[in-house]
Length: 199
Image 1 (tube, rainbow, N blue to C red):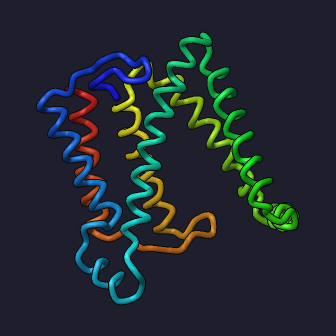
Image 2: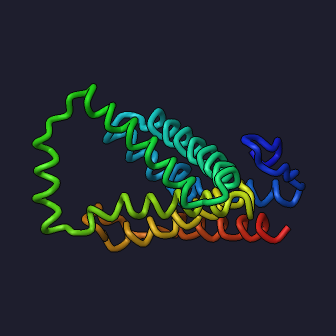
């Protein structure tokens, strides 16, 4: 997006040093997520069918968030307000999700179950607030630092916090101890982010 100035973003050419930084980020991400760990690959082959199609879908979803950040950033410039851009984005998203719920006929009793669970796990309602913060932040930051840097920094933050959440099993997640390859992957990613940020 930055390279070609898509969605009204400023064109920012990728230098050779930044390309190397991007390569480090990708390698670090693969290590941090365990996607290139031989031991985990063998365990996955033995226990479950391939998750590759779902992993590819995750990559596509990540690409969509990059485009969303740029689009919301440009919308914020047009509206002269990142908050208004985030509000428009969330409103349209909510309308689409409500239509999906109506057409798929999701049972409304699930909402009652969520309300009941929310009394014990109050933090389950924070997802929307955190999503709004991310959409507002991306709409505000994309025109300032560029989509590439924004997405890479956000990805690093996501992976760093996810490793912490996994390590301690926070928010009722499955506890997964931090392995040396995952820590090394985060370190490689951090070096890549620094190269992309500084050069």
